[in-house]
Image (cartoon, rainbow, N blue to C red; front, side, top):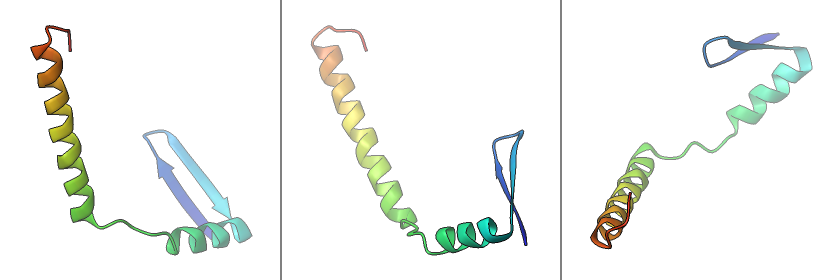
Length: 63
């Protein structure tokens, strides 16, 4: 059993045998967050940062 993991452009890792099986089981049972929840958190963080930026600029400090 061969399992190929690709990260970035030139970073390729091949995992063989028992390691591949363990890794597949680990990733298969991983909790995948809901996409809408992630987008909501990103929007909240963006609003938070925009508010901080406004406050910082209002005080006359550099952003």
